[in-house]
Amino acid sequence: HAHEVNIWPNPASNQINISTPSPFEAVQILSMDGSLIQELQFSSPRNSETISVDGLAAGLYIVQCSGATWVARSRLVVE
Image 1 (cartoon, rainbow, N blue to C red):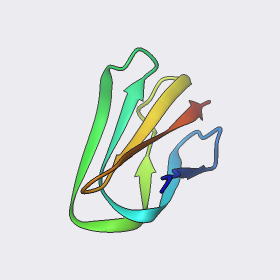
Image 2 (cartoon, rainbow, N blue to C red):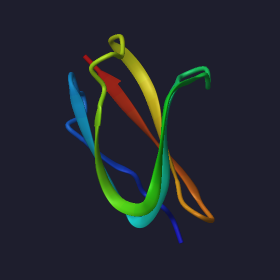
Image 3 (tube, one colour):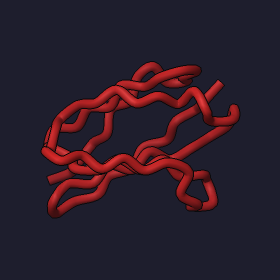
Image 4 (cartoon, helix red, strand yellow):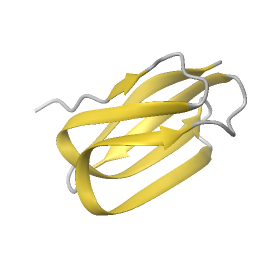
């Protein structure tokens, strides 16, 4: 089934909340050209997490969540 990454607020300035229907084990923030900017690995899978985007320059990013057998992406605007 389709995996959806919900991100709010979007646009964001200091932190974002991420939620997914299936538990995820890692979150990566990628630049639009696919370069890895930030990666978070969790010791136990979760359906939601709050992440700081304080250090990110204003612009467009891809937030990628991955579970045991799936990967899903969503766009994020940082102001």
